[in-house]
Image (cartoon, rainbow, N blue to C red; front, side, top):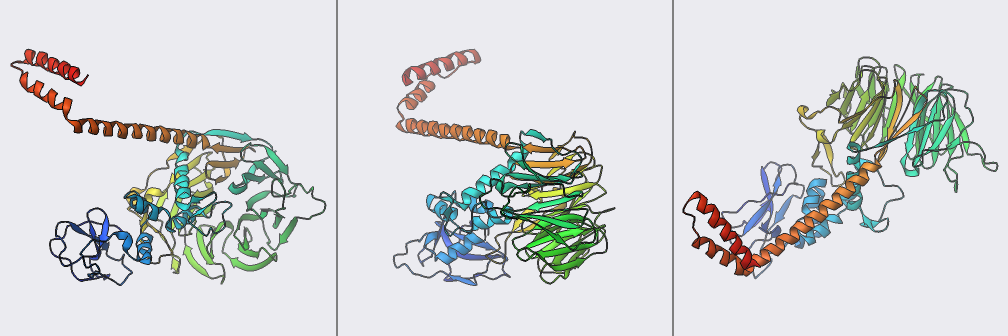
Length: 558
């Protein structure tokens, strides 16, 4: 909801009715000092304004302005009912809520503790690690949701800064799958040598190696409780996390008293893609099916049949998207019904797919080297959705895609990694439900830009890529794993921001001192009198008299 200010030319009406058919629906009277007032009959015409509600933004029905104050004293915005204040703030996006918090200390307190920041954070990056549904505005050492949001938003800009590269050696053949578990600071890799390797993200060291699984590893996924790998032998190799284990999973099989590993059978062809959510395991295969498994009972719940080999999948909020052949699909997980079909999304096979955290944005990469972005509705069945944006950053097939707001990262057979910032393509729309804090919609087509960054020079055939908060991990035909570490750029940006804050404080301090000295008017008035006495008669004498005037002012100042 945008707040607009307009001087009133007539007395305030007794009652305002907000209608979605009106161009502007006044909500309440406010003063010019960013306050809402309930107007009286003797209200001044020049000292009051209106808070305007744009068309389609009002869900409150009507708001009244009556003579509740007998002394005609204007009331502040915070005197409105708490539910109404919360509803107003709920209609703002992150930028607007940040502007409101800068108006005054009181509004800063209200806007900073508003629950909307939790929605902004979770819809972009999910729940923070180690936080399970905090009950109050502060958590995790009393850090608010606003502080976490601002920190993560600042961190996302580090991918345009300086980086270092770590090269991890250990695999003897090509690396087909990489997965970055940011919460545990672990990296899992697998490939043609049929073993799973676990790496420490910070140190870049191999911490564990699995026994050979007897097949090529083509897909890996994990969370804090389960690790799953799939390959050409059509089974899913799973490891449960062990309590107290330094690296969560015992993939080497050293635990004698426990048996954390198990296998799931059901596919009739190589497993090409895997994914997890809180209750299910998703697997796609060249047997032209996607299987949905129950994590607790290790049973197959649904089989989603396709018309071609399944290359990639991504579940979000009760739906699972998949690519098979040239087409892309979105399925309802509970019913197994097909909700959206995108025919011929690429020229050739659609090898890769990723989605935003809310699932409303779908990115596909294909054999033609293109990356498409589609906008997917949540409650509608659509066929032949057209791409909202298209990039062609690669000259070879796009084998892998990964998304971490606002970055889409891709790896290709041309040996390059592309980073695309989609922030400029998205506009924050006003949600119709207070629980949906923002809804993304595509802006003008001319806003599509080329990839913001290309990382190249690493041979050819980069098969898999993943992105974290400040890391990019990639594996390919060379048999090594490369990590781009952007944490150095974050530290440099923090130092620059600190120096900028210091300079701003010094500038404000000097300005205040200058205003204070000018308020006395002693030496400034004497300098102005001296300047009037020494009026220049010519160009040369003018310069001479001007210098004398400056020197006299300096003496008077001293």
